[in-house]
Amino acid sequence: MLIETKNLKKITDIINSEGCILGLYKNGEVLILSSHLMDIGGDVFYTTTGELLRHYLNGDITLNQLFMLSKDILVTRKLASEKTTHVKADLVSQITFGEEYYTNISYGMKNKNILSYL
Image (cartoon, rainbow, N blue to C red; front, side):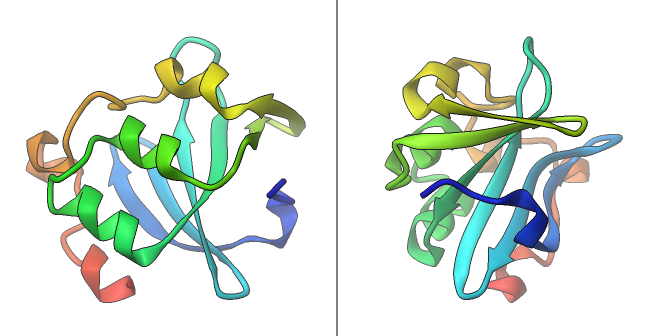
């Protein structure tokens, strides 16, 4: 599903360190995540489910695995006001904290109330 970012309602940051690293959005009833991209910059937007997000938050899967489990094949990258479409697999290596389990992320960067949003 190609995501039109202007239609998203931001729910909260899941990981934040002087800016959003992993954000949670909604488009109607659909959960959307945004992940910050390291070297190329900007954010990638992709769909998820509450169940998959809980697996990530419980430390069962890494952020890259959560990203790849999205049903999206094409994803939207936003850098400033520019939006581009990419094949999901081409961006997986760029996701900040992609290889990390949520349980290993510094406590001060995590949203302590994230489960209340699901």
